[in-house]
Length: 131
Image (cartoon, rainbow, N blue to C red; front, side, top):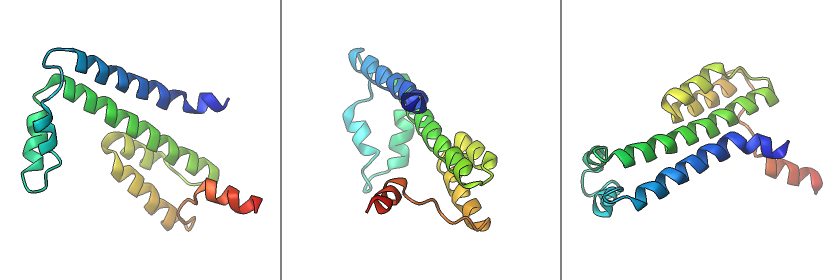
């Protein structure tokens, strides 16, 4: 049952890895590294660089699978946190799957508004119980 918990994120991660590896093996399959580096250059124009990267179909595919994996992972965490602590999460999970990080922010806001507080780190909590 432990593995089943990670099955969706594992499948998406493997799909993402497959897309990246397939892209690398194709001629002109990946965007030139210089263009990719421009995305992270704050002295340049990162937004234009990212828009330029979108002309490469393999980059778009890689980004799509990357974002989908993130959305599923965080969306699932929001849902499980809601189940564990009795918090309504449908709106936060939906927003997370539609536009990503704002869904997590909405979940944090929902936690605070309902008086449940922010989620605690389960690992730290478990270590505190053992000690």
